[in-house]
Length: 108
Length: 122
Image (cartoon, helix red, strand yellow):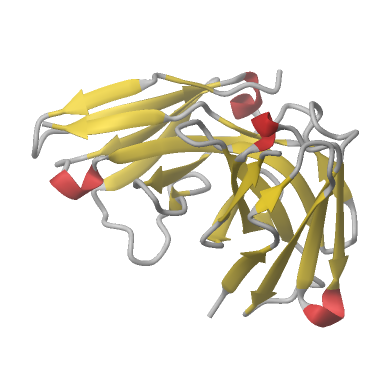
């Protein structure tokens, strides 16, 4: 399968914890990476590999994976975390790349 | 410091061929594990992966668009070029180039260009 499925929208109260999930068969073989995109801006890598954060990404962002599901967790969500979040991985063949449909995170 | 910058026409007519250039710096596309890829995003919609070229000059394409896409690189100029034939208004999107690092089971787009908006209209 070459699809990654995300919930279209998720909301979280300020300071609370939120989990954004991504499902797909390829996630049994490959790690997902996660991107944050704010309006009018290019995506920014926030999580890659098993659970790695690029320099400059706050440690409230973390990643995990189980079976065919990858998760991005924001512990203590801040107003500036309101954005679209996309997961990405290779497809099951390993010869193609696929993005999830994106999750719009609202911080209440 | 890794940077990528997209360049190309802002407006193309239906049926025309789009040519986009990604000019990058701060890394070598000859280094094992390094790739450059194109991704697009129609207004208000999700990211869509288009094509990728790796350090070994292997090329990979979106299944749905592969008949229309060609990706190539000029390592000496630090450029990657994407052509897309037979443009249609539904191809109106912001087109991004991004560096893609790949390992055995992990790979990610760690640096992105700012994107270039391409509008397809007569």
